[in-house]
Length: 206
Image (tube, rainbow, N blue to C red; front, side, top):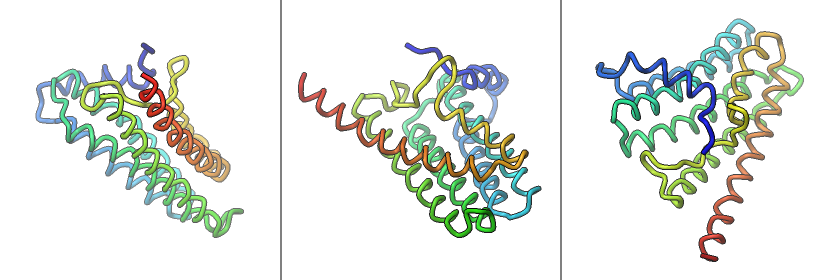
């Protein structure tokens, strides 16, 4: 079994003071979703200051994505609803991000193509969420079990690339990051589409 990524290990420590308080994993999930949406709305603005703030908020939201799961495991509050809610939050957060940046970059070199690229990334994020959920169910993962997740290497997941959003936005590289992220989201979506068929064929061969 691979070790958890570094951000999850950090989250494991940070949530310990919350155990036994009124704060539940679903509270954290809700807060992270709202933070991600506010960040996406800020990124939809065409002023540098707003976009810098939006990128920072979104990175914070994605880091907090690990908090709810860690709090649920450590406090024994894992639930079916929390499992679904966390999945939906991830997909919706990325969909909001891609749409927000797309609208915010219509006056960039991408012009109105930015909206189309953003929609491509948003649709891919939502579809990938659904495919991963299907894989988890097929594996019997569900609540507290093995999940599909992201490729993990040397303590980092593929998804951890989102942490580059903030510094790259601050230094004026939002356009290339946005383009690469949307293309990457589409490729990842296609990869997750292939995995259920491989799993189905492997199960038929058993």
